[in-house]
Length: 172
Image (cartoon, rainbow, N blue to C red; front, side, top):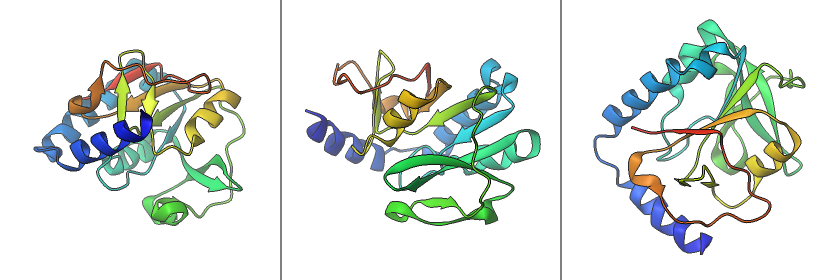
């Protein structure tokens, strides 16, 4: 079922109209979120392909918070602090990853903003199928916010035992 959902929602997401307007709406919701404003550190993905754009969020948070982005190392996702978008280079799967060496170890004051192809009404996310976020969330108890377009919010239970839901989904 997940394979079919992946194919369907990659196609839906690739064909989203009014993308810039939707990204701006999501941006406003994120920067005004209470939990986001309380956090000292933002763990945030670097948007790839047709994912909800995070470049403006990263630029905004770099002025006000500590920002860490994911890097895949030995099949594990770690987060590294960055000081600017210049601290990124193409890495795993062609996704921009940090070139810095300061890995985050303490997640107590952090929130994690995650991508997803789609999210269901219980907060479970469907990613690309590698399980990096689920493995990370299994290890670290961190408040999570998923970002997606409203066209990718679904009422289908696709989750499995090793899947972790996000605490909140923000969409346009």
